Structure formats: C-alpha cells, structure tokens
Image (cartoon, rainbow, N blue to C red; front, top):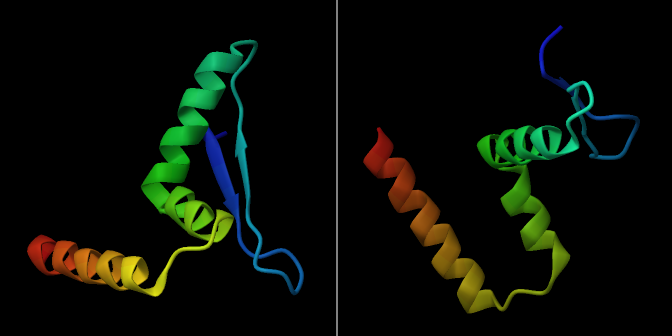
Length: 73
C-alpha cells in the first residue's frame, strides 16, 4: 500500500483527503504529510485561503508563478 493516497473531490465540494500510513511514529507521519502537501501545492492554496491578501500581492504572486513556469519549461 502506498504511503499516501489521494482521493479526488468528495461530493459537490472541492475538498481532498490525504492519508499517510506510518505505524507508531507520529513525527515521521507529519513529516511525510507536509512533504506530500508541499509537492502537490495544496499547502500554498490553503495558505492563500486562510487570510485576505491584497490585490497587489496576488498580482505579484501570480507574476512570480508565471515566471517560475517559464523557467521550468
């Protein structure tokens, strides 16, 4: 069984479920979970939703994201 399974949207909501299976070691499970979230980009999406960001900051983030995409091509 893989360490992490992703189940696509549940119901009409846009929510996701990530499971990490590690026997007994909670610290290791948290470490794996954080890594999986950062790889998927879910962590940044959660951070954006958490608090209000001004329009100028959103614009700068969007431009930076586009620049990263161009560089990685």
